[in-house]
Length: 273
Length: 318
Image 1 (cartoon, each protein chain N blue to C red):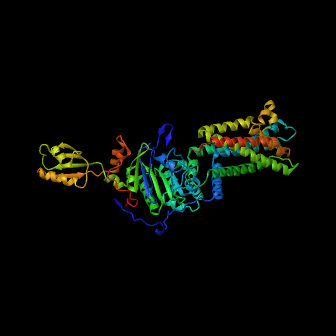
Image 2 (image 1 turned 135 degrees about the vertical axis):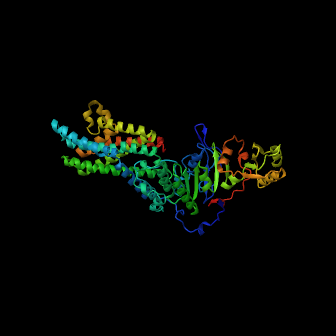
Image 3 (image 1 turned 90 degrees about the vertical axis):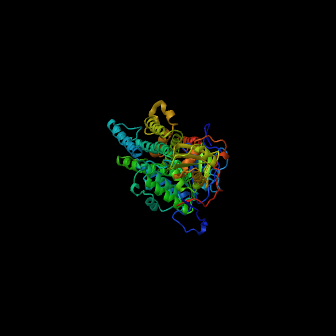
């Protein structure tokens, strides 16, 4: 049954199909591949799309319609002008926090992170890929939501366009960082099912009472507290940029602080398996 | 290695020769996966030294990982990812990946290429896992129970691919609890049980050099009185002889090349003619049961006595 095998010097062996030629693809290509893959999977998932696009659109159209029937304006602004920045903030929060937490939780559960852990993609590459995928999805969301808002009459502030753009980019960037670090914190510590439940629950609570869609000033006494939440800070920073053409430094610092705290805690507690 | 206070792998010492297939064989819970995952860098050895391709799986992770391929025992893919999409993604993480189309064909994944991972059968997941382990053209692949859940044909295909992979110079380390798989594929087999190495050798060494063999003897006329005792005197005091009926006996004990001759000669001297005289061929299964089925005192006692010195070239299954 067994026959001795001739020892053939490696150099003398003709190259076969499986002849080793190992090596990683380089950090750049690996991160891009990972980002493409993760973005595709996020967009393919029906529930994630519901969170990312459908719910924000419903909130925007529903809010505009309700305010129109009541004939109300908010602090002298048209409802759509005030609601749109909040809906954009909601979209950032849904993808950065809820989608990232759920996707990462199930990546742990299904051993995806484990398998990638034995691939040439290093952990920081995996994280960069995730961030890039997240930014791609957030950008697509914002394009769709801005188009819908413009279609229903949104007029962003034109007082100081460069300031508006800088304020918007800072708010989206820091908001994404803050919520993504918190999403990873949940996903890295809890089981996948618990992550799913908690991420959705937190999303609903923050959407309703977190100062995202409506200004924190409309929450009465609680508003003072809510503006320190990442949701309130993101909502305020977006409204400052798009309604008042202003950069809300305090809210941006709050977001940055949440991002740092979230990242540090995640680095300490994240379990890869 | 210990999980809590349960020691999973203790004092395990084994080496793997490049360009060979090594099987780590053991019952469930023996510590096979723990051993592999320590080599893959997933687990940190609490004591002792692990070197893979000369590298420390922890300290030299970044250099090691591109050079190895890993097939996990289960999972490893997103639930919504399509089979071929997953393979292509893993290929894109490597500098010189294999042609994914070739792997898809060879592993019979064409039919399920667009199927989401969660809807693949167990065997399809295994084949995809093997393709993923190989796609980066590694020098060394670790495959954890590569044929679990496969139908016989897929198993043969997998074996053929692993043999081709070895022929092309890739080192393969696999775990299995299928004896026939280890016997068919492996150049060297390490049997572990309760986290300890209890035997190593080529399949031939493990099955040939036994502590004991079983001989069945059936003769043409009834044995004379006192036959078991006299046969036992002929074969040595370690032999057990059991008379099953008046014409058949079961002989169990140390065996070598002369054993059958001595039994024949005894028959001649006692005026009986053997009609059946068979020496039980030990399978790996016998070896395994013999080794794991009893309490063993020291590792020295465990190693089979007639091992040839390790011979790296021997044992290519044909």
